[in-house]
Image (cartoon, rainbow, N blue to C red; front, top):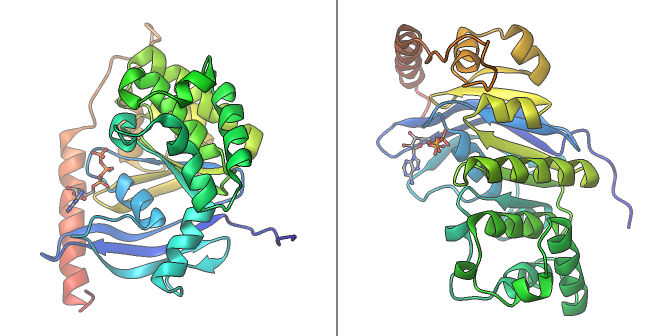
Length: 298
Ligand SMILES: Nc1ncnc2c1ncn2[C@@H]1O[C@H](COP(=O)(O)OP(=O)(O)OP(=O)(O)O)[C@@H](O)[C@H]1O
């Protein structure tokens, strides 16, 4: 079966997510992700980065109500689908590399079936094919003695190894889209570098489009071609990574870049994003909320 190439692997159109108390977590978020592209979602804690990733994967917290917007995977509107179809399409086309590899793995199951089961259940592969692919991917992510690791429980492995396993599991079915949600945050600095390198290499080899959630502009520079900068669930800036670093349009983006610690000793010292800028953005956000609710949108 041949499939038509689509311009965008992912398209998010004016996505809003609101809590029942009216708090807006996502405000008209729109973005696109082309095949083979890495887009970083960046912003400080609480900006809504993970919420976007979760919305795409259909795993928003139950407290969140969607108020409007749509998500398209290879041109197919997820809103237009029945929930069961939507879940099946999303599971077949996408995968998650989570922040915390320990909680993402089932502690009482061996590693092997945790990689192979989704390949059999969701992708309808034979057990043999799934096993072969799991071993191949474990080798690719530099796991020594993959047979032994497949037979181990998560607690028998280091945090770095567990994250390699989740990367192998995410790439195993060759998904069109991967959401990587701060995949290096829970790891120590040297392991972080290796994991980032591995995701970059696998992404380039497979051409999988990646939505990469991070708060770290250093990571943004290393991994992405495009960047969406978020503040309080709102897109402040959307631009190619090079443009963001050379000539960011928004003061907040410049603040984030200046606030990134650098190993270069001659660089300017670390400066947090100025408080008056944050306060101004918070006022803008509140004013926007007033307009939103006065306009009768819910
Ligand atoms: N389960 C939940 N129920 C209700 N609100 C939530 C829930 N999880 C997160 N939120 C709220 O949604 C907003 C966005 O959270 P989100 O996790 O997307 O932020 P983030 O940018 O990924 O930040 P971080 O880097 O801290 O993970 C925050 O205001 C947060 O308090």
